[in-house]
Image 1: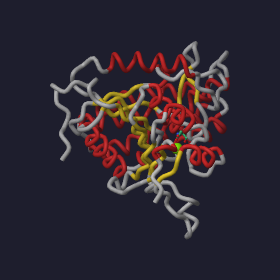
Image 2 (image 1 turned 180 degrees about the vertical axis):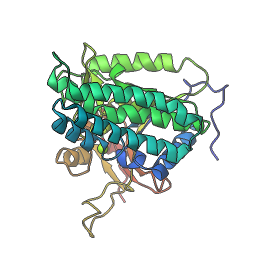
Image 3 (image 1 turned 45 degrees about the horizontal axis):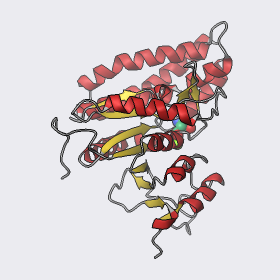
Image 4 (image 1 turned 135 degrees about the horizontal axis):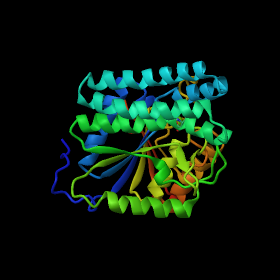
Length: 321
Ligand code: ASP
Ligand code: MG
């Protein structure tokens, strides 16, 4: 068994590993339980920085909510209730009605109020900014939920809103990450975060960032991959682990192609070409920050954490079998 965190362990002595969990990993109770176990085990060997997506399907719901509401109160209210129910149910299924659930409830309420406001839009509100505030809700509800579940499991954790770390331009819906301010903000945040002796796991919202003025932006659908890669580079992480419901990367979609083969290992150049062509199911820019810093990626399966997965590595370390 890996050792648990202890109060005498220096956080700074440990290598940083970014663990990104996609929507299918955190969208149901059994997946969430596995995610907690994976993170707890990681605390034994590294300093995990966790990045989470919204629960599967929620971002699609929020897109529909924004499209359908158009200022109508009753429609907005129905969507707010729908999204709230999804997260409340997840919390209850994982921890029952215990203290973690009651701690989460006020966070949920506050976030739902923001969603209501953003959906209804106010006079003078920029429509594209309001839409990004709506879209950000899924991740903003998930990070505190996962942190509460981890804490209830004896693993100290706190949510972190990525708007404090990831700086973007103001191209709402598909904003571009501005590397230098992001690097500076992220490094300053982590220096402070690791001042305590005890490891506290940060659970960072994927998909979102903020402009220099502090307005929330989203960085494109599937953007949590890019959030995780950006943080991995800023923190000079030893690797990025990308956890999903599939046991690695395949030559074709294994759900629809019987002849799909799992890739054991591939180098950045190959992986980047395929990612940009939309073939590996990752945000097209995910590998850019990692290739620049030679930070390897390990694609792993939440339901089968012992499976080999797929490794994306710098060309020089490729092992030809
Ligand atoms: N939740 C966002 C989406 O569905 C970001 C992500 O999952 O990576 O696009
Ligand atoms: Mg995704």
